[in-house]
Each structure stands twice: as structure tokens, then as C-alpha cells.
Image (cartoon, rainbow, N blue to C red; front, side, top):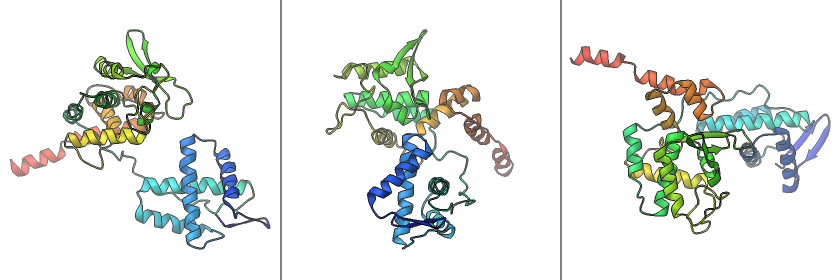
Length: 313
């Protein structure tokens, strides 16, 4: 950061990248979070550090954090701003506990984030159109079709899809299931039910695969530089986006994550209760699942139809 850290009369100047890396390593050990979370927090703190450098700030204060927050609000969505402020608060809480630097972020408020979901879902007609838009005459097409079938009928997150192995597809009683590593978990202890049409799509794809090792990725990349290896979240996002566009659904609010929202919404619309959907999605709190139910109930509100009937007959 090239900043001067002062506390209790002691001074430590972080001048080199090596020293800065050591500081971040000590901090991330304190956080004790998932690797992806640590990566995000560290990236956010480094960007705050760069902001301090650009502005010539060597001894940041509470007012600097507030100014940084306001500048973020002018260019970023509330959820992004909140992520930065959360990282900053965690960082300075740690520096204070280590007597490295005062907690200048104490009592600084994050921005209000709307509890609703930021991505749209698909109607049943739109979801079918997305699946039908995929050309299944090639191995890539069979794979893409199987991936979107899986996501639309189980609500699995993209990360769970790319981490799935062939041997995670197993039999449980009379049904086929896919075991996956739930959010915040360290093992593949959760599973989703695989319906017959979805299993058929996955099996059709696997038959075309040259790699059939049980530990191989269930869905493999076809790119030149990493063909046969595990896919990335970016590649699945691209697959979903291409299928959406092919179906005439080109919107910033429709992404790979929309498949998860589609599953939840369609499940509720077609008779599943909130507890069932909560279990399927792996939500720790039912309040998270209730957002879907509230949106459905709001959409069913007939007030506007009744007023329209009075005005227009």
C-alpha cells in the first residue's frame, strides 16, 4: 500500500510487494473464509489500496473510507459497493486487533441492497425455446444441451456444475442423483434428483466423450487450449448466453444464473411448496426462498386488472 501504519506510537512502512503479500496472507488467515471469498476480499482491498496510492493518501482516515464509498456508489451497483465496504471493514478490524492500524471503518454503514434477485427468470415457454435453440448434432451441442437441462431442472449453481465428476452421477433407490458440493461445504454431501429426460441428455453426451474416467469432469471443455479439462464458470455463462440469444432472449438480466431462478419460480408455480424449493436450492434460510414466493404473489395481484376493466370495459 506504501502507507504508513501508526498505532500506539509504532510505525511500520509497507514498501515492497513482498511485505504487502505477507500482510494479506496474515489477514486472509484471520478471515478463515472460502477460497473464492478470500480472493474477492483481497482483490477489493488491493483496489482500495490503489485508490489510496492514486490519491496520495499515506495515512487513511474514516473520511477517506467514506469518500471511497461515495465514489463507488457513483459507478457501481449497491451490491458491488457493499462487497468493497465489507472487505474494508474486515481488514481494518483485523489491523486494529493486531495493533497495526486503528479501525477507521468502525460504524461505517454499507449501502442498502435490494432483497430481490437481480436476474430475471424464464417462463416455461421461454425455457423450452432456449433448449430447442441448441444444435445437438455435435459433442459440444450435446454437452451444452445437457448442461442447461441440468441447471433448469435442478437449480444447481454454475460452480456446482463445473465441479461435478462423472462418478458423482449415482443411483439412490430407484432414482438417479447427482452429488455436489453445496455452498459453504467442503465435501460433495448434497444431491439433486436427475429426471429421466435430463439423464438421457447427459448419457447421450457422455457416449460421445473419449474420456470416461470416473474422476473426470462430468462436462469437459472443447476449447483448443484446455480441451478435455474441466470447464470454467465463464464458459458456462457463455453457453447460457448464446442459447438465450438464439432463442431471441437477449437481455442483461438473463444470464446463466437465470436458470436457477427459473427452476425455483417454475417449481413454485407448478405446485412445489417453499420448503421443498428451499431444500432443492440448498438455502440456509427460508427467507431467501420466500423472495421467489413473494414475487409470484405480487405478479398474481389483480388490482391493475380490476381498475383496467372499470376504465376500458
